[in-house]
Length: 133
Image (cartoon, rainbow, N blue to C red; front, top):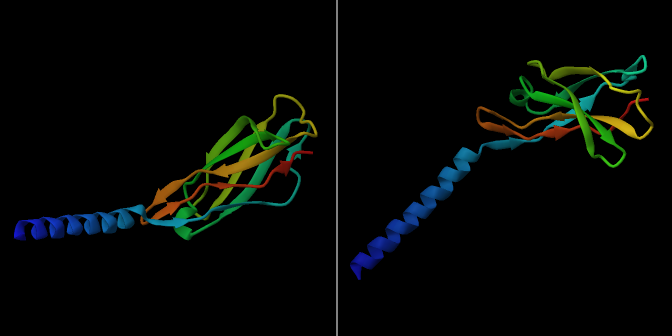
């Protein structure tokens, strides 16, 4: 009987230790909002330039991988046209030349990719659809 109690107590301790360890390694999750600066994104017939910043925890702003997509009116990605990284303050600029002049059904969208920064897990963020014209 004593052996059984000792084994059950030991197993309970291992389970509790595992639960505490998994919580500690998960990190604090921080949301990310991709903010687009106001203004026209189209220069000429095919050149696009989008500027903005990241609204998130300070530790999550710098060195974030950024992607610029062309999407259709349903939000489906048609192409990735540029990539870059954010500055230490969370500012970024992405620009590209479109293959063809944009149509009324095409939009731009910016994504900040997920990042682990110290004790934080910085969630990916996606901007709203940006009208090209």
